[in-house]
Image (cartoon, rainbow, N blue to C red; front, side, top):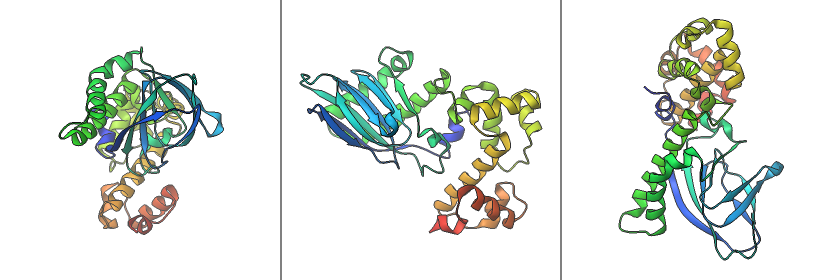
Length: 276
């Protein structure tokens, strides 16, 4: 399994809405759900988005920004004389934010500029997505949702290939050496992995691997292994898998009691609370 698919097979994005929004006043407010991820694309005009903490980004026609998690934002038009400022908003259900490691980037806005290499790679899909969403025809809703999902996956692929992100899971997957160890964890969470065996998967010495992993991922290799196991467990319980004895064995725990203790420590609630 490739490095991105190893994540998306467990946490698959689903487009829940694709809409265009026009702004006419100099200052407006945009509220985006924190339970969803978003791709915002400037169809026309220019504006500035400002979120809590004064995080801001300026978007011109053809630019876009990926928000791992929605936020409440102020919208400021670049020029009050603009007759039309419109933006395409693609909303994605990416699984529960607390469970999906790709959404640990909620504090980051990943901007894609019109003239950059990523935007050029996305251009064919972008053209189709705009055509179907702005000029609806028979079956457009289904087509637009699938195009938006393909667009997001292609964009994440480009983030990895261009090493666009410097911290977190996508950053780890961008390093081919770390990616080998991360994919091994994703594909075989039940294995009794140790730092030495993961370093061997990466083709690195134990000390160099440990240092690079923590610097890039923001946690130690063993902490990520535990986090991935518990997130998988929570996802499976949420989807109806309630046999904890079998689940704990499938994720490499020798006892259900040890699994329960680790689950509560990492997720913050008992396994039964996830089911409810």
